Length: 330
Length: 260
Image (tube, rainbow over all chains, first blue to last red; front, side, top):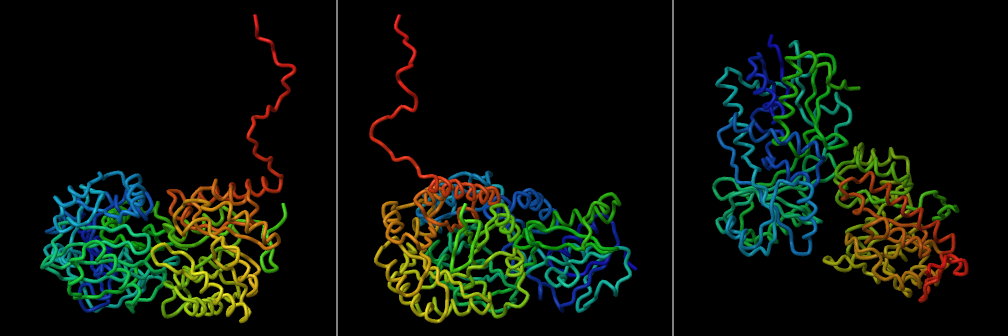
C-alpha cells in the first residue's frame, strides 16, 4: 500500500506526483486510458507560462499563483523557453492593449520597428504591442513525457488502463486529479469547451508565444519544433468534448491570418477539441473529503497553475495544519 | 418610482445586463446581484453545442431567478435570426426575443431592413420582439407596425463605449413614440452615459461589455445601477432648462458692500 494514490495522469496528477516524490513520499498513479495524454485535456494545452498576460481575462490570484510556475518547470523538465510573450492588437483594438498593460504590469510597449527586430516574421504587423519579457513557454506534450521520465528515474511508474474509483483504493491519502471526470464526486465543476489546431509552415518563424487581442476571437500562437505552431483556443460554455465547428475554425484561422498572412498557406496537421474543468470563478482549488483531496478546476491554466496546486496538495499531505485548512467539499 | 412595463410584465430595475465576456460565471452572478438587475440577455449561438441538458452555465443563469431575454447576436440575415429565435424559445421556454440582425461585420451596424422583416415573421409567430435598431424614426414606425411593443435603439455601435452618439435623434424618437418603452442598447461605456440616456426619458438601458470588461465588474455593475436610478429620478423631477445667461441663485440686493 502506497502512502498516496493519485488518480489521473494529466498535468494535475503528474505535477502532484513529482511534488510528492520530491518530498520522499511513496506514491502510485492510476490512469484510466492506455497511454499518456489520451483523454486528458492537458494534451491540447498551449503550454504558456504567462501569468501576466492571462490577467487579461483571469483573476488577480491566478496571476499570483502562476508566478511560481516557471521555476517549478525548470526544475522538473528539460526544456522551458524563456523568451517572453508578445501581445498584439489591430489598430482599432489598441485600447485592449492599454487595458492589459494596466492589469498585467510586467510588460513594456514595443513599436513596429521593435516588433520586427524581436520577431522578424511579424515585421508587417503595424504595432504597437506589449512584450512581457519574464514569461516563458513549454511544449505540453514533451513536458508531460518529461515528468513521466522524472518519476521513472525515481522508481515511480504510471499504472495505465486502470479505471479505479476512490472506493477501490486503500491508500492513506488519495489525490483525485481526474479533471472534469470528477464531476460526479465533486460538485461545482463545469466543462468549458476549447478547440485548438496545430499548423505547420516554413513561411514564418516565431520565437515566442504571440497573442492577438481581438474582441471577437482572441488567439495565441505558440511555436513548437519542426515549424509547427499551436493555434488556440476557443472558450465555449459547453461540456461537449467533440465537434470542431466551422465557426470556430473560421474565427481562429481568420485571426491567425490577421496576425500574419504567412499562415494562409500553412498546413493544418491536427485539430483538437476537449473541455477544461472549471469552477464557477474559473480559479482552481483543492477540496478535501475524508481521506481524498480533489485537485481540480485548472480551467485554461493547467501548466501555469498545476505547480502551485501541486505544492499546496503536497503541503496538505505532509502537514496536518495545511490539511485542516483545506475547504471541505459538500 | 413607477415600474418598467415590458409586454405586460413589471420590473423595479431599469437596467438590463448582457451575460458575455465576464471573467467567470461567478463574477457574472455577482454583478447581476449587486446591480439588482432583473433581466439578463443571453446569446445562444456559440454556446449551443449539440445538447443543452444539464449545462452548468445555463443552470447558473437560471439559478439567478431573473427574467431571461435570449438574443440573436451574431445573426447576419432575417432568416438566420428567425431560426435562432425559434431555437431560443425552445431552450429558454420564453417568447421574448431580443432581435439583432447585423448588417456589417466590421462596424456591427444593424441591418434595419432585415430587422423589420424578421420582426414581422416573429411577431406573427407569437414572439414578443425587442428589436435592436438605430434611432431612425421611420424604421421605428415600421417595427411598431409589425407588432413590436418595445424599441431598442443604440447609443453607439456595439462595444464602442462611446455613449450616446446622437442625442438629438434619441430625443426625437422619445417624443415621437411617447408611450412605447425605449431601451437604449449598446455603446454605453460609463454610468454617466447610462444616466444621460435616462435623463432623456428612456425607459431602461441595456449594457454588457462596460460591466463585463471592467477591472471590477461587480462594483461597476453597481455604479451603473446607481447612474440609471439617478438619471430616471432626474427625468421624473423635471430638470431645469439651460440658459445662455448666468442666473444667480441668491438675491443680489443683500450682497455685502466691500468698497472702502
